Image (cartoon, rainbow, N blue to C red; front, side):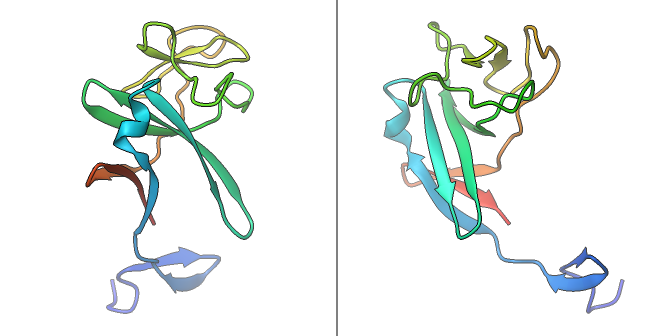
Length: 132
């Protein structure tokens, strides 16, 4: 690999520099205390992205807020993503249930499908998006 190509992404046959990692604040860790999960809406010039952040036994996970069955939002009310035991993420439309630690669906109608994970990091009492 040439020095020029290292650290670049091939896009439509053009070499573009890889942008630096973004560290965008999604929420505070204590925002997750009340329900165990929080919906976050990110907006930019040409996009809106909806995520959910889940706190489970000291670990934080984040996923796109879309059911893989019909691409519908998962929450039935703001920040209401989990079953009554706080164990599983539940789709409000189809009642599909997903494990919090890997987003894998364990019930019909989309058994085996997974939520799209989002790379995050926790630092200084907050959760940050950690993607390029």
